[in-house]
Amino acid sequence: MREVGAYLAENSPRANNGVYERFRAVLHEGNIDKRVQYMIEVLFQVRKDKYKDNVVIPEGLDLVEEDDQITHQISLDDELQIQEGLNVFKFDPNYLENEEKYKEIKTEILGDDSDDESGGSGSESDNEEDDEEAVADKPGITDMTETNLVNLRRTIYLTIMNALSYEEAVHKMMKVNIQEGQEIELCNMIVECCSQERSYSNYYGLIGERFCKLNRVWCESFEEAFANYYETIHRYETNRLRNIARFFGHLIATDAMSWAVFSVVKINEDDTTSSSRIFVKILMQELQESMGLKTMSERFKDPTMRESFTNMFPMDDPTGKSTRFAVNYFTALGLGVLTEDMRANLLVRLVCQLSRALNWVTHTLVM
Image 1 (cartoon, rainbow, N blue to C red):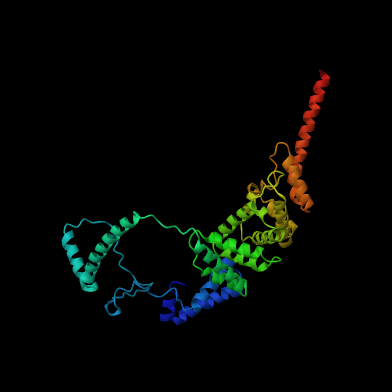
Image 2: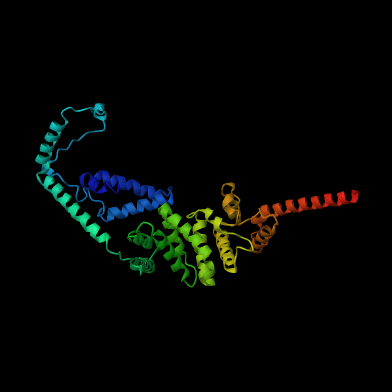
């Protein structure tokens, strides 16, 4: 509808209104995915803007004047001559003669400018090649001040701070010209703005959630941002750390971001710092508050995601030191239900150790 809406509104307003009325009914029913809902809302905004970015005929493609156009109108019920033979290559012994006839017809329709333009474009391309060779000899100039990146961050910051609602903020930021590969900058700016608040605001969580559900690219960028922030969380003071943890907790609890991001979290004495332990604590508390302990426990015990949680709930340490550390850590957070598998693992190891010790003592006494 975004591509053909302008043409449909001009030539068949009744059909156009019928389509949008159906879209509006779908929104009111509320039985659709969030991403589909956002796409329909954007479509209504495009219609409100009168398809300014989606014209009927893009500039540069209107080559034939309307009086010279030959339009063939067909119906869905018409029987068409398929002419399957046109799909098969056939050798043309009079190829050159037919090409000359085609050029005459082309000149009659488009005029003689096409040849002049082709000749002119050829000379221009030669000149451009000469210029490129001359420029290649000169040393390049690289802007190390990252002026464009600074301006992009400023634009994103002002947009977030001046918006009245998260929907308005997302809508305006979607119009910002973000180059491919710079999506992570927008995600970082949202997290940084959130961390600067005195207390956590759900406004930022809703912005991140909508971006994640709009496009998979944004979701992957936020997952990358989670890994980066977890690795550098020791650089942040407690208040900023708390806001960042609650922000990502909101994204994970709403399934805007995959739970596979927990693969970067390692709960053991060697790989954690006081900051990372506080970060995980606040993150887990946010999940528990949003989902409930039972639902959160079921998600962590999902067999399809078990591989992503192996570092959080370590059970492959031969000494059992990391397992005991994780058990004590989560139990102290009031999440002992998550440690059941680790406790069972420690119990099995203890039984094996006692069995080996008993066998050794028995063997010694017999000797």
